[in-house]
Amino acid sequence: MAAALALTDAGSVWADGARALAGVTAEAAPFLFLGLFVAGLLHVLLPPGAVARRLGRPGLRSVLWGALGGAPLPLCSCSVLPVALGLRRSGASRGGTASFLVATPETGVDSIGVTWALMDPFLTLFRPLAAVFTAITAGLLVERGAREPAPDAPAVPGKACGSCPGDTPPAARRRGPVALLGEALRYALGPLSADLAGWLLFGLVASAALQVLLPEGFLSEHFPQGWSGRFLMLAVGVPFYICASASTPLAATLVAKGLEPGAAVVLLLAGPATNLASLGIVRREFGGTGLAAWLGAIAGGALLAGALADLWYSRTGAPTFRIAEAAVHEPGLLEQGAALALALLLLYHLGRRALRRRIGPRRSA
Image 1 (cartoon, rainbow, N blue to C red):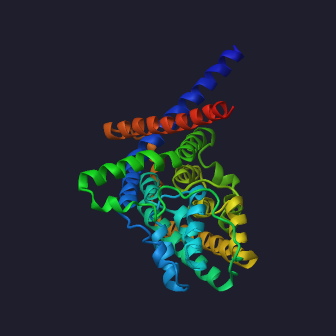
Image 2: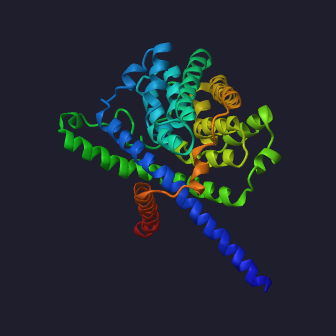
């Protein structure tokens, strides 16, 4: 009898988890596809070297271009490092490179779409603004404190991602609108989706698991509040990496379970911008002083943004994040179709990746 009850409870948990996963995927999928499509258009229409040409002269102008040029690009931390270092090797200033290295992974048109779907209008606007402000601060501080790299600096590790600003072929600008739209869709559903697939699946599954396993109000009772909570989330976000789109459902679920919005904002900004690999590369490029300036700007910007977000929500009494509606809101046909398409797209890219890894060793043998 006890075994039967245990199996029933386990089956109920799995069923609740599946419903939660379907709900959060349905909420996010239409806006994620919209963000991916806009990112594809940016990839096709952005002139070759448009960002790189404006990062050469040290000073505020190059820092602004690094932040504003990097903010809409949907590059995660794994791909922004070689792109940023490629810009640096092409003559970009220290400050411009540093600001690009912060703004690009912290926000992007894809993550803005998911923020609108799962959070609220305030954070949809506040998150990219905070990312740009943090990037500008980091660029200016690095410009003043970093050392120049040694003349024999090593080559850029890896290769630039397909969404690097200088990778767009000149022929793309001479094509008709239909060809441009097709190229944008191929890029959005191909290389860009493949880059995001693993982390995005992780974010959706983790969000669904937390919805089922954490009781309502659990974090408000057991997680530190105020500055203690923000500093703790900063300590989690700096070494741990999760891309901007994948961190969004995770952060929204944590808030729905009682986490203060400001602590979630700290995770949304610090998590995508830093990880152990990026810390090592930044130190090699800009020295210990430059690393301290870069990391201090990210930490300070995230903490300040978190405090401002908590102040906003406490003063305005803004409504709960939209992810809370996913549990009670029955998705429509558009949302269901988008969720199914997203699931198939993620499975396709993850399956291809697994197949390549399996076939690769056999061929080399």
